[in-house]
Image 1 (tube, rainbow, N blue to C red):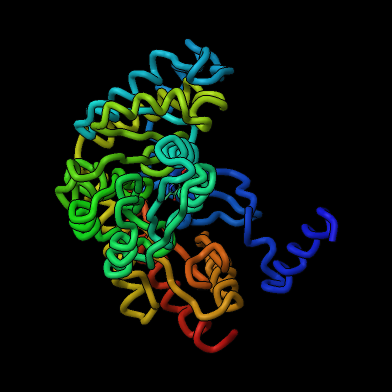
Image 2: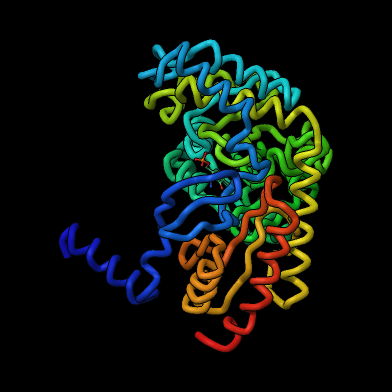
Length: 397
Ligand code: PMP
């Protein structure tokens, strides 16, 4: 089979899995009206499948900051952080992240994906080990592959399995990086951080926590799981993204290890790509300021999360164990998941359809993401519609 035939075979396999479902992926959003509404085709839909957790995509402060930055600094930096792409704003945002996490240094990357790629591949290399949760995001897996380190997975949130693997590492634990996520993106469950820290302290290694989905969501001031659990000082490196609660695009890493600074000189995903645009940096700085200002957005988010989680649970949907902004209904087959997804769209609700191999353990998911801008009325409508459609996923395949 030549290279193009291999792609044809992959396309045929995808079609066989979901004959009518091809349009479900990468669906065109024609117009965006607000943080909660958009037009898909000729439908005005409720957006229940974005990562806009604090609902800040149209925050006037962020929009104004982005406009000003374009006016003053132009549309792009046209260069790497290591060359001409480190403006005042990039450095200021790094200081602001470090200050937010009470850490000595912070680095800004062009995306969250690259933050994981850059930090992991800068920290470990051939001969070293990464010990990662099996449900880790693709950016973590790809960072591990790029690094050339020995990759060991423990079963998702299974602390006995993690301990078994740490014990087996013996002396090589000294050159081991342990990686977990604050909130896992598929089922919305949280890392068992207290247990992970306890095992790290018992056996050794460094710990990296990806707070992509938990920044702005967990903790009194929105730092994430590190704050929710009071374990900020036990985590060696925190990575995260601007593309969720901060409503732009980019990524970061903070740490109290002074060696973090050295990553700027060895990390290809930091060096060999253009830096985030001035508008991106400016709106991210404004969003971080809003996130830090108060807990009202987080409080609103959580009352929405609890409402939808309890409505879906009550009807009988199989959900992840922790209520939170990521609420995924686990469905038996890809066909049922597609049917539910299509019917929700017929009711003017857009959610994410996630099929194997993207979801863990071959699961098929219909995933909602709740945000602070949703009204309680919108949330209840989504819950009621899921209730109305419950029989679909039990009756048909
Ligand atoms: N880490 C996790 C856990 C994620 O879910 C994502 C994005 N879905 C990323 C990293 C990458 O973030 P970005 O969108 O900024 O590339």
